[in-house]
Length: 536
Image (tube, rainbow, N blue to C red; front, side, top):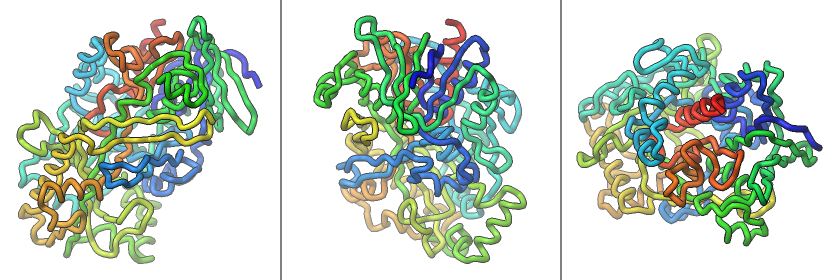
């Protein structure tokens, strides 16, 4: 079926795609098609914050990817959640609003020779689409659709951990988003009145009221069709309702399928490593060796401590009465455990003094469990997950077949460098020092995972491999870069090199991972492309 011609075709209605659709359709002359492989975001658990538990690894909302067995994780394979629904991963993520650090963006600007990526310029974009709970100031805006709220809960055990961190030397902060996120405090979250705010509600809801947007869900994109002579994008082929479809493009295809999905679509379209494509029977239209490489992710080390004499969610939710009270609190006030982001308390610090700036991040939770999807432990405990903000390990993702339904091969390659192993050791040691402070002592913290008996460097590296898991921040697989960088897939305006009328706008375009959660930076990148397209 031929759907006709559009000025812009956006592939993927996630954090970037929804924002792009909203910005581009503000111009009534732009005819825009938005394709989303998933369904509408009308699943109840998307909107109740704690519902991420029921959205991850659920085929209704998640692609259900898995990594290849990883040597750095002692040959374990991990679930690798990616949103497959309107709103994309913003419909299943942790809702944490985090920009990263000033140096992240200044490094992007230096790397690409493009000052538009400097912190100063990126900050203005963040402010433009933000609706901050504290109103407008030097660092924040309040006229945008992306609501940033305070959390609607508190936990004594988290406050005690914060006091211990203060004693260790980590100062309190009430805002992680001013360019230096050092400190400890409760995360700001993307919620409205106790409900999750996803990109679909924030950006797409208003765009769908405009007659120049066509939205198709259940549209699994096979490939982008490119003229082999001119290298100009012609159309997009996709599958919907068990039928083949085609849509023509007049100006540009905007690929926003994420760090995994965008690679798959580029490779099936003939853009990637020539030898790999040919081995799968795909003609190489553009040899781009960087496609699928440079995969970076934040590996969290989930340290668990049993405590006594202080309540945690483990026991609060262990009885029918407890569950009922939790449900009633949410029903009446939209607060309490059901309004929880997966992590509530955050901290940024150095794992050792030689690091020039904060290099580790904590996500602290008033609960514990063996692994995602299992019941909480029967004993009171908290989890202090700690991640290396700027890992040097690099992985890859590539298609395993030309078949659109085939799962990709994802190799994050965690802990493959001596630097990352050293930071992992330092992270465990730092956590132990925090927990040993006076404020926590009276609650008799006992290290359940990985175990206080593990002390040597070799034991701690092995332990990191046992307790490490993804924090769902894959980036970099279609990185932007300077013209002199042959491994860069994109130029500084996120245009695919060697192709006319094709950009990649999602976290895959990041050359280096940001020092924190990645949803807001992805939206900022989409806002930058919208700026560019307004001037075309």
